[in-house]
Image 1 (cartoon, rainbow, N blue to C red):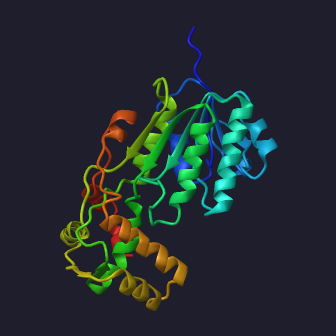
Image 2 (image 1 turned 60 degrees about the vertical axis):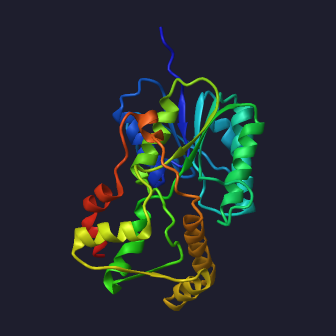
Image 3 (image 1 turned 45 degrees about the vertical axis):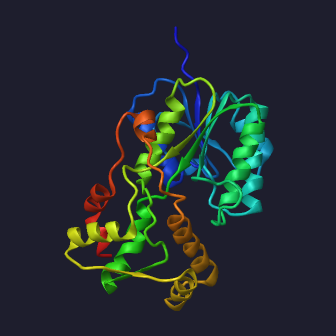
Length: 291
């Protein structure tokens, strides 16, 4: 008789966590699936146990993780020291509860020196997981393709894409495919620990992405190269708060410096299918480009 590991998905009320639970159900997983959320009563998954999982309540989280074998720690939407503390609580709770394996949703290259403000949060969490003594799968997720559905509509409207990314390349991956990677990591019978970067099928420049958007919509886009300072100032001029403008500029810097250019087959390895390409993703979401 084979005993299937008990799987726990944190953040199951969010877009990524909910999709992971749905994928586990679609795969027909025969073991126990537990969905964790700060509001478990709102989850409503058929055939899935829901438990309250609040990273700010270490004792309650430890209780929620009792009996769990494999724990998907989805990074929270806070930033800085608060997020680092919450994630540390989650790792400590997993240790205390006897969890055997942690899967964590990180970002590419979070090591010290990376300009993006959330990198230290992910690096600290990765270090806490490695120090825990538990087996782990660290999933360094590339940028969501969904980000393009926010960036491209105003670009298509104005016909200009102001960027400081230059000829840097970025491998966007749809959220659904990162969910497939995370679900696959929970289902995997891999023994030991590993760090995997989860990307799309190709790393593209802004000009290549603009060409795809133009081809799909018939609207021409001129990519305009600017400095980091000009980009930040321009974003503020169109109404973004200074902090948000600065954050978005760091994304262009990381893009330009090649921090998001890696292309891997992690989705295929973990789930058995290739992720959607940027062209396929934008074609499937063409209506949103006109938003």
